[in-house]
Image (cartoon, rainbow, N blue to C red; front, top):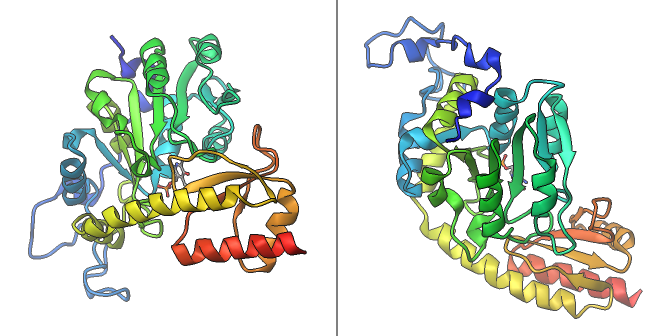
Length: 350
Ligand code: PMP
């Protein structure tokens, strides 16, 4: 049976958690003189003179209900990037413990590994952008603490095979993080339902993509309550500000827009993929389960510069392995996508 305690850094296991004023007294009172706040008011507006709830009771409850998981399985972070960093701080002894990533993938895993001085092992995706399961199983050793998988993967856009992900979870005696930042755009259920029977699985989700709240900064980690409890102990006490919690609460109570945006983005994704595929300057458009299209151009550098000159910014991913001459294009509104296509046509007429 997998025991996360065995993998936790000894200093974290022995940590006496910081006890904030608001965690020592969390009832309601007439007068709060416990947290060195400004009792007169706030230059930012009503209510912001008080520290936020350190355990984010209301928002965690809403998230737990929405995603149909127990509250003890929910961690809320300042973006899912905070959860990524915390996992390194909890599980990887600097300079000793190892993490496996599968390039080309989201760059933050490597950056967080470097910040936390974790030993990085790369097992590249196959030419079909799927996991090299055999290669991963050969790379996992007793120092491996974390494996980061991203599905749908950024920047390639495809889902990883669920059976491969589960095979790795079952074979690895370490934490397997599956980043589902783009799962709402995929025709495939989340791995959240696997958590009860997979104690080493951490699923990352975010409000930054389908929910349209990138500026709010709310990310979520879901896992076995033992892992979540350590994450909640190690996080900065007030990591979610009052405005972010209020905005996220409001957003999660108005999901009709989100549903229709997802439908629209998926239908625009097909239209844009087809249209790009007919352009001479495009070599291929990779199939996408996300809200972007990895597109291989004949001359990605020249196309990138031309699009910039027309006020359109896409992401140049051409230096990543398996992504030569590739630009990653977010699916925008129908009008934005049309402007992009018109600009590509103009490039081709030059
Ligand atoms: N995971 C993936 C795969 C991403 O692409 C991104 C952002 N581009 C994130 C996580 C970070 O999300 P957040 O805004 O929640 O920090």
